[in-house]
Image 1 (cartoon, rainbow, N blue to C red):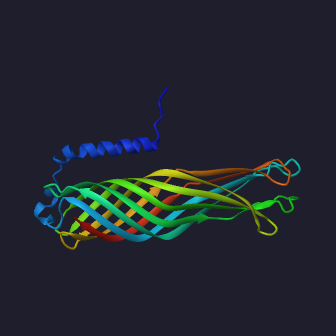
Image 2: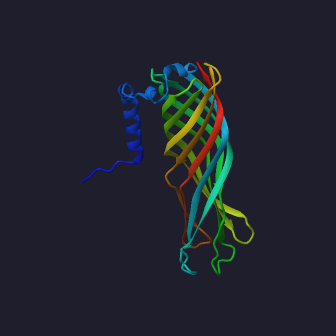
Image 3: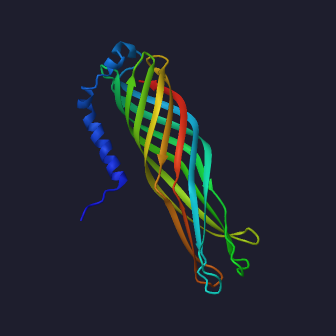
Length: 266
């Protein structure tokens, strides 16, 4: 039987292999021959750096909700609906990293970034069932994320005295909260809610450019993307003496972020 490996396992393995194997490979990379003489990278140096960034982050996904009333007195056909939703919010990030400047201007390094934002996706699904009276007919699902940690392998190129371009191969580690509120369809009164918290992982690539103001300070801008596996919440409840109602909520979130900030090169 063939053993199946998860996407996260493959990503982590690739991250470690890249980190330990980059040094011998860099000896064969002749970036200087492409127009990046080492003398033009005088505003950059090997060492540790600290940074802060601010920007906008967009979370989006397609919510789907299925309600199965499971009541033999009425129509027991499950009701399904789905809708694309999105949210834009401010994001703040702090980061710490280390990098090594090779003689040809190549810049390998590692970094850990901590981002904070109030991501929140929500929607209202209306389900109508003849004869149900004041039994639930509305569902309000919500997906929230407040923070993410992204360790990354960073590959860059200081091709001029002031300019450095880079790409980051990161692993997003996020804590999500999923909640579904059940509401009566006649007076919009919440009668119960279901929620869960879970940690999810995503490949989190980003690209950016750094402009050195001096050997110790730089302005940096980045674009990044995360796409997480599906979040799912299945709730079961006995309503009005009837058999269990079952509600299934699903969403697969993706996040695009653009940031600009300041680096301090120690």
